[in-house]
Amino acid sequence: MDKEPHEESDKQSAGAALREELLAIKDKVNTGNTDASETETESPEAPREEDAWREYKGYDKAYEEANAERAATGQIAVEHYPQATIIAQVRLNEATGEVLSGHDYNPEAKSHTDTEVEFDKYIDATPPEERFVVYEGGDGSFTDRTRAILDRADSGLTMFLADGAGIERTSGDPTPKEELEDLTRRGVSIEEATLFTTLRGIGSSLVKEPGRTIDPGGDIYSQLARCGLPGFREYSEEEKIKISQQPELRDALLAQMAADGTKFAMEKFNPVLRELGLPQFEVGADGALTLPGASGTQLVEATGPSGGSRLNEVAKMNIEFRDRHLFDIITDATKQGKKPFVVYGGSHVVALKPALDNYFGQTV
Image (cartoon, rainbow, N blue to C red; front, side, top):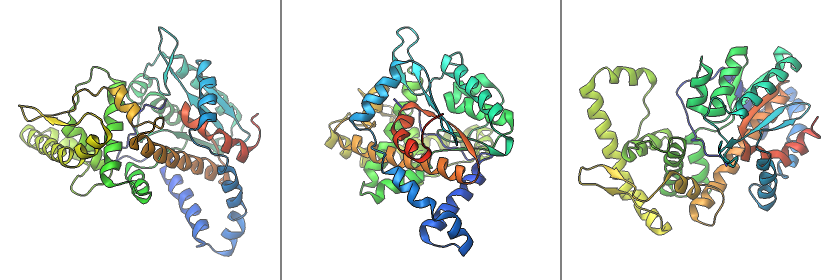
């Protein structure tokens, strides 16, 4: 039920420095590159983390049952551990009450007001030096609640609340480049891996905005750039502003990006799509790339963890990597004396609960 696009930004959150420090400490422990005092402090914790992680079973039958039980309430689920507050988000069909996903872009949704209530409780119960916020997806900066939710659903709201309270914050997700590197380490081809990230991004955008007109060529270029693929580059916000002020340069650049994305799709993606029995990209009479017969829902399901296709298999690898990354962010923060306030799509929280229960003990 996690349908939010995995977004990244050039900006770094206030908690990014802490995140890097925590991950650096973890790397030292894993490689043995520590002095005597660091080893004495950190090494006893490592087996505890690994023991807890062994309880993680991913998205198996037990997860499906637990997730269905959570979704049946139609409300956010809150896990109050002594060292952390973990919120599982939910998005409902307002007319039927059916759970659609873990991310709601409606500023008036009850899930958001419920999250704000929990945040106020967290502020009251947690000393300033122990506060630390973790959200899903890439970084952003918001001064308006409505705009934050319209742009980034619960992640936007969480960033808005953290900044308003002056709290350190960071994303619990790896970067797209880190995701791609992990998949290729697991034997996924670069074509399969980039096709997965691209279709996931396009599908999620269409689910978020059903009437949106997509530019597959340009979207593919952007996805490949975010993954750090050679020959595809990201532009900083400053560069984008300068380019937008020069219409001729902007139009030429966008046309070239679409052409490069189209070429990659036709040469690299279509053979994989053909093998998977999925709709293939086509070039129309106007030269624009299209993906006929593919809806947002279809693409999200094709890149989700449920199902027996190769892309579903890739999705399971990817989501496990993301879950472990989030687990490490949470546990490393607690070892630094923080009590994280974590807001994530409900599916991630349900999948992580057995490992979190083992690590933190009983909820309060």
